[in-house]
Every structure is written in C-alpha cells, then in structure tokens.
Length: 351
Image (cartoon, rainbow, N blue to C red; front, side, top):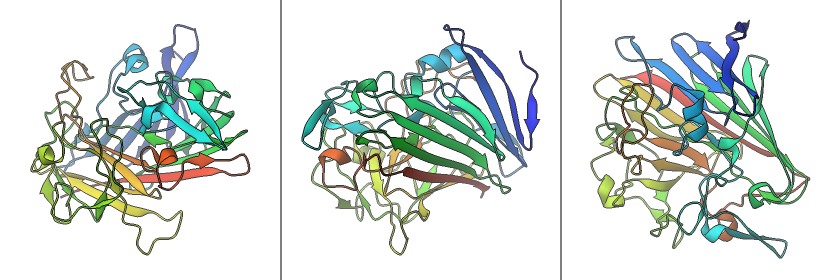
C-alpha cells in the first residue's frame, strides 16, 4: 500500500484494487473534529465523522468496510449518482425530436443513471487547492445518454467543518444531467438504529406528490397541513406513513424566495435528541429528495457488522425535480455551449 501523502488537510492513500487491476484511492479531509473520507470508485463518501454535544465523534453516514462491498453497494450509500439522479418515467425522454431509451432499473422506470451509472465507475481523483477533485468522462451513449459528458465533483471541508460538494459538467451533444450525492445519515451514529426520532425543520412550503412508481403527478402541492409540513420541528417518524407506506421518498421544493440563481438556500435542519448532533442542508438547486430509507431491509451489513434496518438513515439529495425532462419543471437539459454547475452544503452542529 502506498504511504499516505498529505497536502494541507487532505491525505491520499490506497483503498485497494478493482478486479481489473485498477487502483482505487482514498482521500481523507480533516477540519477540526470533522473528517470526511472519499474513494475514487463511485466518487463515494465512505465515512463522515462529526462530534456530538459531548465532543465524542462517530461516523454519521451508512457505509461499508471493504472495496468489494462498495463495488456492489445496491442502495447507493454515499455515491455520486448520474447522469440523472432520481427517476425518468419509463426511461424515455426526447431531445430535439429524437427519443432516447434508458435502462428500466426501478420497476417501470429509470433510476440514478442506470445499473452502471456514475456510482459504478472509477473516477480520476486529485487534490485541488485543499479540495478533493474527482473527474469522470462518460462516453457518448453510455447507459443510453447522448453526448460525451465530462463530470467533475469537488468535496471540501470549510474551517467550520461544513462539507461542501461542488459539481460541474459539460457535454459534446445535448443531454440531460442531474448530479447528486446519495449519502444516508444517522446523526446518532451509523448502525445505531432508526432515524424515526430525528427531528426535522424546513422552510420548504411545497413538495411533489408522486404515483406508486415515485414519478411526480399533478405538479407542485403545498405542504401546509400535510405530512410534509416541517415549518415547526417534528420527528421524522411522526407522520412518515401518512406520506406513503414506505415513508418519505419525495422531492421538497426548496424555498428560493429572495434568492438569486446560484445562491444557496436552506433545505432543512435535522437534529437528533440523544447525542445532540444537527445537520443543516443548503443547496443552489430547486429541489431536494427527502428519503428515509424505506427500502432498506437489514440485508446491507455495514461497517459496524450488523445489517442496517428499514429507516436506518435519511437522505437529502439536492436535485432538479424528478422526471423534469418529461414534465414542466426546471429542465435537466444541457447543451454543448452550456456548463452545468451545482453546489450543496451540509453544516454540522449540536443542540
């Protein structure tokens, strides 16, 4: 194993080799008591440790111990997903009169870039001015998407210990792009049980109702008086099953009133009462998928040596609205003369 090399608050070491013989690197970012670890396979956030109210640190993202497990990773723990995060109805979309067909890997629909999406790819990793820079070049028609797409993701920690994820992409042909990070958080510590008692507060005043396939139906709906009304702090489990039999797996419409394009807006603050950790998510995107791991079933044995249960974590996946290319939402279309950019910040604190 290569000896770790340190550049500022970033260290680089080997994480092992793929069956192909290709080397996978591990980058470790540190700021105070916050540590984030990223591997070049799937551009995965494999570990994120933060202090609780007593100052004790624990890993707050669900994850695995071995590269072999990360290459399987059926539930996208920590992955950068793309080209399209979330769903495309029936895997079909049109650009300039031409129809494209994607893999149907989520019932009748396309999910998270397909079976060999960005979460299954080896990215090029390097240190860039104290940030971890990951680049992946997706070939024309890879997973059915037109155009050669060059995607770049930067992970960094601020001096205050906030995790910042910056995204950029360019294409050689008109295509669709919607990149996000699919980390599952448990603020009591990964493997410590469910997140039903975690409390959420959010300024989002609208959400997207969905059909049984999690495809938006009927446009935007107000959160007031629904299971999605988080205007006052409420446990995630309080009304979760009023939302759906599997709990929350819905797009929150980010409240961008008074915000310019490219300016961060608050999505939500989630707090965990026993250990006292808090997470605050902000993004430049119009939407964020709140997913409370209703499809975990205990078969994913994590780094703690036990299976992660249903609702063992929550995700806040910043995004353009699901199925945007087929609906009247902010478009995911990217043309060769444009540059896709995005940014999401996860800030950590205690209560």
